[in-house]
Amino acid sequence: MIKYKTGIVFKKEIENNMTKTIVNNRLMSVDVLRGFDLLMIIVADRFFYNLNTAADTRFTKMLADQFEHPEWIGFHLYDVIMPLFLFVVGVVIPFSLGKRSEETSDFKLYRHILKRFVVLFILGWIVQGNLLALDISKFHIFSNTLQAIAVGYLFSCIAYLNLSRKGRYIFFAVCLVLYAVLLSIPGYFGHTFELLPEKNLPIFIDQQVFGMFYDQTQYSWLLTGLGFTATTLSGLFAGELLLSSFSRKKIILYLFLIGITAIILSLIIGIWHPIIKKIWTSSFVIFSSGISFVLLALFYWLVDVQGYTKWAYPFRVIGLNAIAAYVGSHVFNFSLIAKQIFFGFEQFTGGYYDAFCDLAGFGILYFILWYMHKNKTYIKV
Image (cartoon, rainbow, N blue to C red; front, side):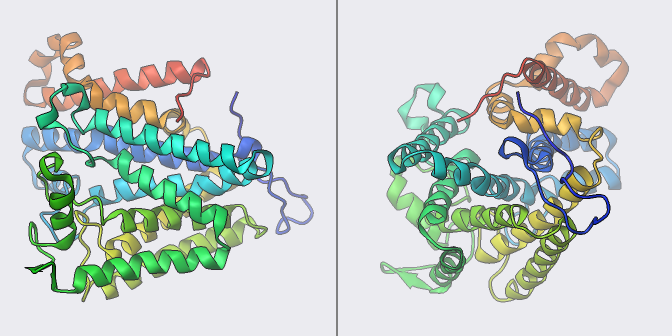
């Protein structure tokens, strides 16, 4: 049974000198933040699109636009969802590997890491790689968030186990600088490259390496593994801060200041090296990681420090079964399932029927996740 201690054990007479107790290597705020992120992935984009289709107002248009990726350069709210997912994976690494490294052999530890990498990659094939189509011509080798997580997780774990803290910082910087330099050099292999769709180095490498299994989108994957790793490492640094001996107030302050500094720095760097989510530029890594730090500070303050947990329960239910929620929402069309159940509501909802079914479909998925939680059933890899 998973239990939480939402506060940090401390002597009442010396409030500022607090000793943290983290039960079962979990902080409730991390699960809640993961659940919040999954909620955005599962339902937000489709719901706001259908809501705007029905309402067609300036406000709903603004919401719908923010839950779509920009054409190329720039940043919308929707762009933080995938890097936040990788960031939270990184946050958990010091909690999980710190204890495992003390209790298990190196062989078992690396076997566990490699197993997670393989399972995440296979799930990515199921979700977006068209594995279930059983048609080799439709199969994509590398095309999904779970596979980006697999890459970031693998190299971040290796760095955590083999490098000092300073070494990890250097590795993080090398990933960002190397990727930025590779994107900035105008020509390789007799080809000219620009930071434009279909004309950039990461896309060229994907096309050459994956061949017929390239996903034919503007999103890059293979070389962009440098960015995926850096994003996950940024979460790892946040996790180490949460486990540090600093007081809760200092942890919140440092998380917030690091986040704001990263956002400002990325905007400055973005003048020369633009923020582009689709190829995960280094400025995008810094910008999205900055937002993730700020969100973690907020959730940590609300949930683990202030103890405001009632509002967080639905997010925790989702966050504790993140794999089930993500894979389930992609394999099964819950909006379509909702239409088979709530078809009678179309006469009352009119043009808002699709948006209603998006919420109803999410309600069906949430009920499944809630039932799993009540029965202490958690799908992990």
